[in-house]
Image (cartoon, rainbow, N blue to C red; front, top):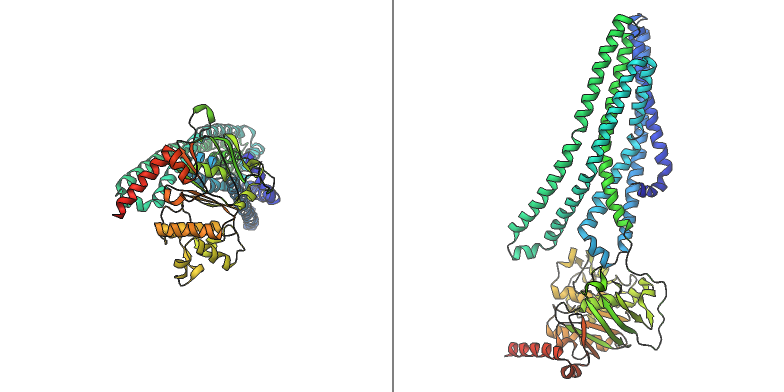
Length: 582
């Protein structure tokens, strides 16, 4: 958690002042046993009268009121600091995650990132609040009570010293054993969160295949593992309170035993002294119980802090350039000996998603990319969008390596329609304005018209204001695809990438979409990834991929003659269409 302390900087004044008020409360608590001693020894034993007892009682009430006010101030400041600190850490963590490439997102997984940004931040937030409120007070009371006991009777105060040392050893032992278990609990929570996320997002698939019982069993196993991990850490943490009570109560027995002998036989102690010593030992007990609970809280916070720092310590692997895009007469896009591997071993494992890809794309061209499943089509366009860095070779935009180009400018230059359609909760209008926030309604309707979505959007009573539920589940697959295409078109990107984004469209709508793009966006480079030869056969250039290799490059007619793989794909689909038309 020390690394995360820098986020306390905006609240450092409050974080310093708050413990001071808690210290004031602790000082008044240490005075209380002395006042009690005076009431017993002077007010009762020496019979100074009811006025003296009432006077001392008034002092006790005053000490309690001032201590309560000090405590309330401290707790208010602690809440402000801890909540503000948690907000800053959560925001910084989210901001850092946004810098991750797909590689880092794939490495951690969305479920554990959600757990760390919510549950783990809550744990360290609680740790900060307890740190401010109690970490100064508890040790001060233990040390202060021991010192006060020394002023009453030096020999008996040795019991306090031995008790404090013994309890410190116990607390250290419990803490050192608990940290690994708490880390395991958080990891098991990640697993349960992952399963929950998968089931909520895939509930329709689960029900379609009647897998409810299997998923319930899988979730139950994850919860059982989480339960076992929690029980294991609970067994260790549960030792704190009983051991603390046992040691302190034994210490009180010794105080009463030796102190009683001193009162009866040696008269070096008074009855008030014994009461004061027992009160101080009780204060130590209460302080150490708080400290024991703090150990559990700090152990959880420590484990969570480690997990959060693991995110902060992960540097994005994606190269971040600073240069602007400068158009010229060179090829707009150039792939030069590009190879890529998802594996960290890179080229050493020979598991290349793409291998030695070379081609050029010029302004206004329409490019088709086709190949079998797993041939590397989506990987190729993700590299062009700079969602991953190439493993070998380079991708050039107007002759400049895209690694050197400012990422924000590059993404604004390219409109992407991903393979998996994603719409966000809000309205159609809000979803369409993702690329250009100040887009006019005219621009939105124009994009919808090109994407063949204008007709069904106009049928809604609210039009562009029609609500979109989470995930766009109130639209069909074809409607979602057309809306995501329209979203990419808003703002007129120079390059439009459609990653198999017309798969849910019927042939008539697909043909109308391609015709509209060709007629209305003639200067735009359009890259179409598709499984259908009918969708790309009129493209200016077709790239045929097989097992990560570029096995064919040319027009439809050229590839029918030169590429056996493309010819097979076309023949298989042509025959299938022939059967369907009969």
